[in-house]
Image 1 (cartoon, rainbow, N blue to C red):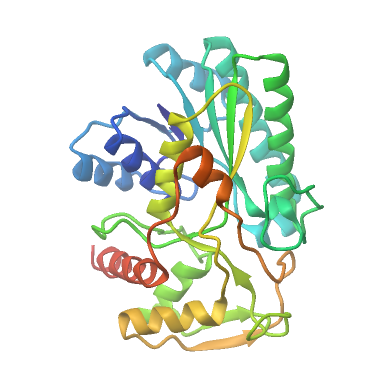
Image 2: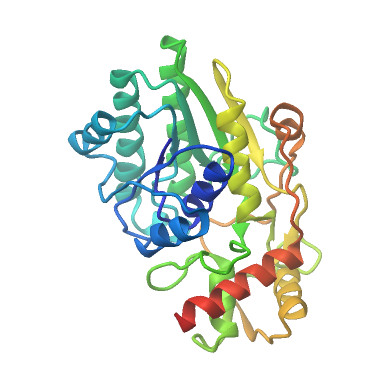
Length: 330
């Protein structure tokens, strides 16, 4: 199984879930927002060798070298730029990176007769639909270019599958992954300033940052802060294993979330309660590209994949904090 972006946060946990389910894994990652150390940690946790290629998946020749050297029976495509705010500031960069990499990867699949493809999409494709989000909804224009790239990639994959009936695609619309592997050895360790909430919270908890900025407290939610569906990253990883193992002909779309909405303030309070740590915060202006509320209807994944999120919010907070402590001390 080729995992693109496999050295990253979601990718490294997905590699573990795949190996635990009996799959062999090859990783391709350009390390733009990850670290090769995570590959060594996956090896340590699984006692398996992980062939690793430091490449950009938009490099056709580099991709074809992997397929020539390994028997690849499926692809889980996680490589891509993912910061909502940055996508608003640098739309051309996001369209180029996310679309070209997906097209190049699919072309390689067709050339080498690789029939199973799992794509990392996002709940942002729903735009400002009514929650909970259901896979059958019409997709509304996302509030940011990042979401647009995910919609475009979904359409590209759908169109290609229509004319290549043997090419089967599972599109996974992620909600908000947080937490870390229970060992504390791998977790979310972004390069530079975090774009996601939880690593920022943990860095505040460690004293690396002075306070957490909460973007807006005037949304129509229970406490005015944004509502998201936070899912443990290992539950998300296990969803990828279920998707590749249950993949049948055609294009299939699944929400991967818990089905429960949690506000930013509720998450902060849960983190404080789980870890006995105080998280100072300040309310600042809303962030461009954000919506008020986002959570999933997960019944389709439960019904067709036999998958459901098992870990609760306190577990997510405890595991994230354990990794932060280990990571900072490493």
